[in-house]
Length: 577
Image 1 (spheres, rainbow, N blue to C red):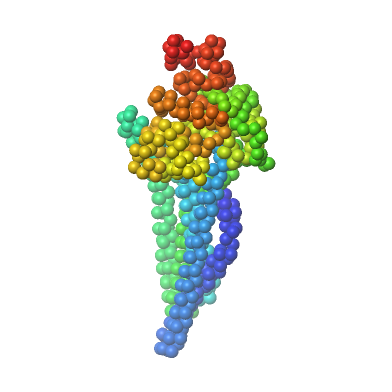
Image 2 (cartoon, one colour):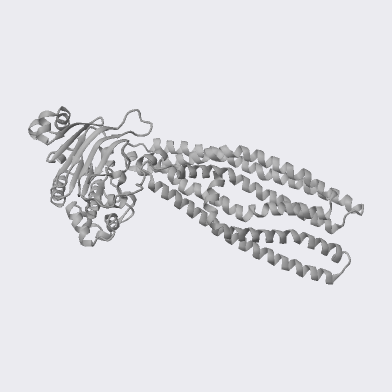
């Protein structure tokens, strides 16, 4: 997965990568050449007292060092730029794919996991690429080149390398093999910590209301300790890596000095050659250590790449039309024809053979007990998810064939849980219509019964709104969400229990203002409160995903037992009449 991900997303950067490899090759060659020059200065200059030789080759060493530094700086520069570009592209790809997901796919992964995959997982892959460009490219060149140059200094002494390199390779491979499953577990437990923390921050008021701070503290502690436990296990293996490498390095250095001294004593080797050989040994070991450092990062990056690819390979169940319809002949006509919907893995469908017709100038209400499928039915219209059977038609066109831009212009949804984005009142209201004037915003606020409290805010339309709208009350959030949809002025309004947080007076005023504002539009209301929908032109009663009754209030009271039970659970017989 990691190779596939890198192959796809590094393809546009072949030229800078080629330049980077060339610079790394030059700087590694310069690094390998320096010990040989040093050996020549010792054997031919220092030993014989030839100052001119020392100065000439000293100047050459300085020139080679300058080349090494310049090439290294260039390689690091291009490596950092390419790695950052890769991270940007992968994050953008994950973001684009997540944006295409329906509510089904988002629920399948979970918001905390998607956030971790877009941020932390991409960061791990980016860091691996950065380390690969700055370390790994030069490591094999330095290792092979160091062995060749060491052989050039003294072949018999090079036998030490035959023992050192395999031992290092085997030790590193065994440690890395044990680290890979630990890194996978680490990412999963990081998801868990994110999920618990997200729930506690979002549900802070509920936690305080039920005095469950101690329980939630214990829940976070357990999740945190689980992550700490696997991190400690990984850390112990990482801590074992470097001592293992350094032990082999130090033993091999002692062996080189021991056997090298005997070679010098027998006249088979010069002092400068031994010095150069030790330098090459250290370069070879450094190359192995760089590779070791990379091997430590590869398992975690592989796990992260798999998680990223899992998102990128997941196709949305809401597929964009291949030949989208961009023009509608009628305006505001909504029909649900034999709609079925089943969540993945569910034993029973949520909706079964639902039929519904909503026309311009009429208000259609949907009511039913909790879990009867009201919100799911409403979500089928703007394609939050697609029907698994039947059709949803807007102006006679199946919504699966409708252009998304036309859909957004035609259908306006006020969700059951209104969400406001961080910004200002104005930026939230202009979300569906960026070019809306201040006059249009104030008109929408007046209709939504939100103008008074917005005027009282410091800044009015420019008053700040926190993420999720947490700095305003639930009723104010609902009214701002309604105003946002009114600014858009769609032909079909969908209100998913959007008046539940309002008091009866505000509810009545808002419905009266909406009736005038949406007189020519199609209005579909999902509500639990009977008083909100009793005056609707058509009331659709849902029970366990099926339509069990359709009609006006007085007709259903007389002929539909399910509707009658819902009404009488809220109103007296006299009030219902």
